[in-house]
Image (tube, rainbow, N blue to C red; front, side, top):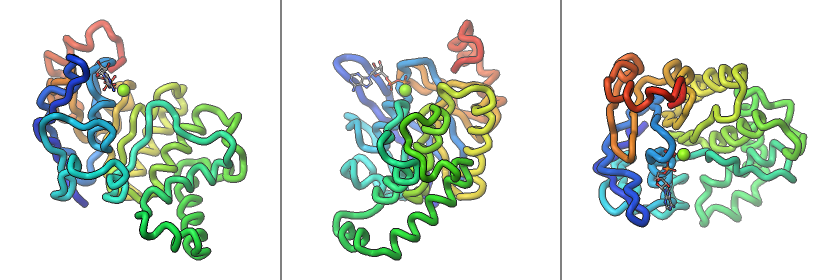
Length: 253
Ligand SMILES: Nc1ncnc2c1ncn2[C@@H]1O[C@H](COP(=O)(O)OP(=O)(O)O)[C@@H](O)[C@H]1O
Ligand SMILES: [Mg+2]
């Protein structure tokens, strides 16, 4: 599995520097967290990786390929999936069909017709979707419409949809936001299983510090688009600048 190398990334919007020479490496098989105050550039970094934002300078390499040279729709084909801070699922479809939407992310234009026509393919995709839904504890919602499902379930549907594309790397943008304590513990378990059981590298943006400290191999702290420090949870927690930046924010990142 490839590492993700981010090298001197720089991007600004109308005078606001969103990322200021950001460099970091997410190693294959890691659970790597990105924390920082609101507006520090976390989602922008995700948007650069999946091709929504086009940085001025720098490189993002995944398995030796510079992602900045790829079109947005090509990124999932390289094995990079993501979830969004604001949910992107479809209310008038069943939970299963929402999850299956992710399976088609990985199909190139050339393959589309062939794969749509193949019943065997559909059966295999459904089996994978159900397996993933089972891992996430939402398998019994399969035939239910997404509309009216609790927020916690819709968040898991979003993660399941990303997983069904069989990524090598998954980007999770605030998976625990809006979740209660019990659901947050559940999310921590799920993220660990995504790495341990499915062997997927995880890059996660999250505000819940207890969750971040519990699950992460390493953490990168961003502030105003700059990397403050990168290290293991215990190292990051004690870093003087981190203490300063987060002072007064309680347990929030
Ligand atoms: N598309 C955009 N247009 C203008 N400004 C943006 C855009 N995306 C992000 N920004 C700005 O870049 C900074 C970083 O935003 P963001 O990456 O969303 O922060 P975070 O996810 O850490 O809260 C903020 O000042 C934000 O307003
Ligand atoms: Mg954000």
